[in-house]
Structure formats: C-alpha cells, structure tokens
Amino acid sequence: MNYPTLNWLVACVFSFGSQEEGLEGWATVDDRVMGGESKSKVMAMDAALHWEGDLSLESNGGFVSVRSPWNRGQLDKSSKVVMKARGSKGVYAMRLATSQVYYEPTHQAFFEVDETSWTTFTWSLSEFETTVLGRATGESFDVANVDAVGRIGIMKNDGNPGPFWLEVDFIRFE
Image 1 (spheres, rainbow, N blue to C red):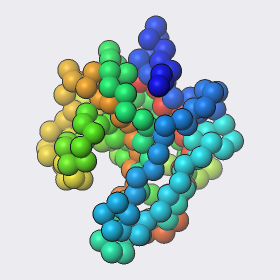
Image 2 (cartoon, rainbow, N blue to C red):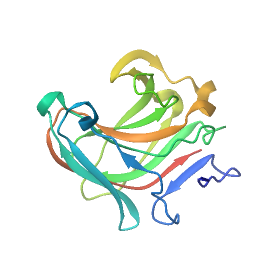
Image 3 (cartoon, helix red, strand yellow):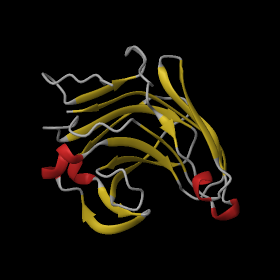
Image 4 (cartoon, rainbow, N blue to C red):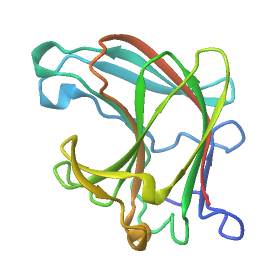
C-alpha cells in the first residue's frame, strides 16, 4: 500500500480534509486489548480526522489511541512536527513509534486543545520524550533515528475518565 508523501517540501503530510482516502489504514487501539473498558472510534468528518470515545479507568484501563499505518522511513529528513487540532479538554500525546512491538520505547509530546478554536502545534523532534509502557525514561528522541519512525499516533491517557473528542485537520513533518 502506498501512502502519500511530499518529499520536495515535507517528508510526510496527513491532510485529512484534502487527501483522498486520508484515513486509510488509521485505526484505534484502546485499553480493551489489555482488559480495560475504554472505547474509541475514528472517522472522516467535516474535512478532518474525527476521533471520539469514552475513556474508562475501570478494569485497570485508562488509555485510548488512534494511529497511522506502519510505514518506516516516511519521516526521513524531518526535524519537526506541525499539527492543527481542536477537541474536548484534556491532555493528549502525539506519539512516534520506532517499533511495532508495544513494549518497546515510543516518543511523545503532550498538548491540550480548545473546544471552539483550532490550534496549530509545532514540536521539534528533539522535544519528544522517550517512554516505555507510558513511563518516561528521562531521554529525548534521538533525531538521528528519524528514519526509524514507522507510525505516528495520538493517545489520551490523562486519568480523566469520560467522553472525549478530537479533530485533526492535518499533521505535517517538515
């Protein structure tokens, strides 16, 4: 499967409003895979990725996530991430994965959104903190390994149960 890239300007762009079949391969992974009770779903709506659900802390739960298909090397030569989003209050994390194995390190940067206004976030890749199973290691993402990133995603695991929603207009890697 080929996923769109714009190598002349940015390494990778997900523009959910203008990209034909922009959500192809995107999927949710919630704490239900480990016995939790959280639920979420992702869909195209109003020219954006629309992700909604219910975060539950029951049955040792506490996370919901949405992520792109696996495609290593798509971020080659990138040094920053730009995302435009809005949604219900809470803390979310933009995540970068260099392994398909859940217990391997991932890298994340946190953000909060506004329910009425679109916000554009910009992170240097060096701002992403390395975590293992949600626990910070005290290290930052090694930008020299940008070509090892195979998946991007967004997670909500802020400990605030209840309904949530998030809309993302675009995610760019420059």
